[in-house]
Amino acid sequence: MEQISQRIIQETIAVALKLFCGVVVWSVCLGFVFRGTWSSFLPLTLAVPAAIFLWYSRAVRERLMAEIERTSVMWLFVVGLALRVAWAVSSGWQPISDGLDYDRMAMNILNGQWGLDTYKPIGTSYFLALHYAIFGHLYVPPMMSQSLLSALQIPLVYSIVLRASSDRRAALMAAALLTFCLEHLLYVDVLGSDTLFSVLVLAAVWLASQKQEASFGCQFIAGGLLGLSQWVRPTAPIFLAAMAIGMLARTGQPIAFSRRLLSVAFVMAGAVVPMGAIVALNLSTLGVPSLSPSQMGGASMMIGTNIATAGTWSAEDASLYHDEICQKEVPAGVAPAIYRNQLTKEVALKRIAADPIAFTAIALSRKMQSLWGEPAALSWPLSTPRIVRLFKYQWIAAGANFQYAVCALLMVSAALRVKSVVVGRDPALIGLLVAALGSTLAHAFLEVQSRYHFAFVPFMAMVLAIGCCKHPSSPTDVDPNR
Image (cartoon, rainbow, N blue to C red; front, side):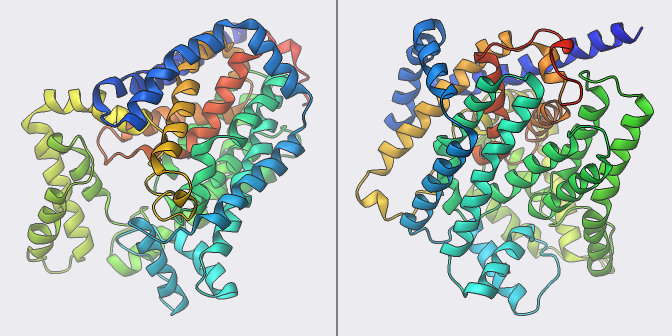
């Protein structure tokens, strides 16, 4: 009976993995229809034959594997850190868009305004405020910290893949992919939520999936990190649910179900304090026990259900929000932010009901392409860099688009080769897989931007590396005490 149960779990994970990889590839291929600039369309066109060549050229793959095997994860970490620090120092980035809000909120924190902000999650601003308090209102110090946080994900990825597959080449390849990933590297100069959120999530799933002996402390800390991530971006419930599924569904070790439940309980307990603080603050200031660190979920739904703009921000929705919704009289005893949130959700539901077929079509095409079809919006990290005076923005963007498209297209073959049992051994891999699919579903209804997939870039590197390398085919090939 237990073997049958494990087989069902493994087959389910295999289907989920193929679905995820299919979503990514479908989204990238939609670029042939929806991309209009040469820096995105030409790299995608060239990526198709490049991906086919890399996959079917065994000699090239073996040579690449041999070169990777000669290196070490410490060397990759040092190189990755050096590249990220060099970019942060040379960038000259200045706050734009959301960065302006985080910067403003950080200065407000230094002036004693410690509460939540109804417009943006405030976690990133606390991170910035800490640096401003020590170094002054300078942008390079937090960029340096982000460079370190970004580079730390390289050994985390290595550890997860090694634990799941016992294949050092696959682990090194995953680490190498992340080391030189332009999307991941370039975002260290953006003083936004992306890098901070990504490292919190990856560190949490790594900690939560450590070996079972005396690991309840690690699992409690993992829950705390996921709880902290809610302060940075309000998606912790998705990751907590995904991590619970990962810990319960793991197939690599003969662990009693009661022990797995206890592990999940420790993760949830760790998340209670940071997430409970959000609930308490919202209750005291807004009168509602909201788990969200901001009250713009309704606005995100309103934007995300705008069929005309394919679920992306527009001046039309900004005008609707500020000139109409914000001007309505607020009922007595209701906080303005809560009332506006309610009104925007009503607009969103009316838009879906008005044309559900068109909304579904947009969700499966333009919204999917916006979320997974290209690297995180490079207009953010490349907005004001000094280095662009030497290298045109379009050439940097073209390189990142080509790199992302090649890796994404290779994931089709990787998904077909990855043994479901390899992914199923590790709760981190299952958790990230479920969270990626859950996030995709959520953004069918919410505002969508390509940078919202940023936290899953390490997972994409791990899947690709495991699929491209030889790996064990049964749980007995792995030391259960690893």
